[in-house]
Figure 1 (cartoon, helix red, strand yellow):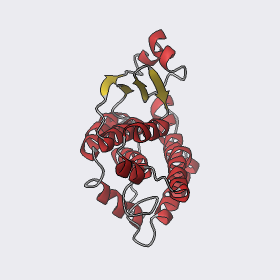
Figure 2 (figure 1 turned 120 degrees about the vertical axis):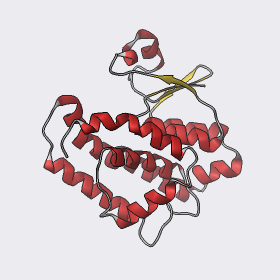
Figure 3 (figure 1 turned 180 degrees about the horizontal axis):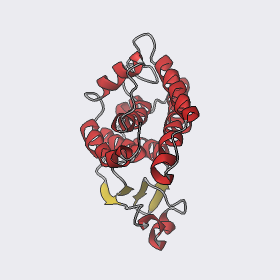
Length: 217
């Protein structure tokens, strides 16, 4: 299946790690947003939102990383493996979904609200937006209280861990210090040896470093 991506993108890397977890091989199609490749007519036919990641599986096109992650698990994950990544129990699944939405709408969103205007628009750093990142990390730290091993609880990693781990890898590359959040730091270090594809996630994330190096922290 074709996977349109940018290596520096946390959502793209989350899909890559999910594919590794379910044993699916992706046909990587590097998409240069700066060159406008996402605005070409052939890409717009696949994804009118003209964003990455975008997955095309035998003619079926899908965007939004967390939707893609769920699709890969539900279609290609083996039963036991799939139940760990996206539990069938309604309450367990609800917690995983909540953490995925937390990553999309709070953690990753606030990261972007602070950093991306500086990178792409040359805007000054916003102390208010920086404070909101701290609040989001405090929420995550609370989720991991009591020596919880995984962001959605349970005894194995889930899609929630994969998505949040990709986001925090970008935090690290951006030079953002989250060492004040002890539970987050403990969890983050443990995921490197737990999530399949974590090494590739880390190496791909380095592609974003030049953008963050342009701004003052």
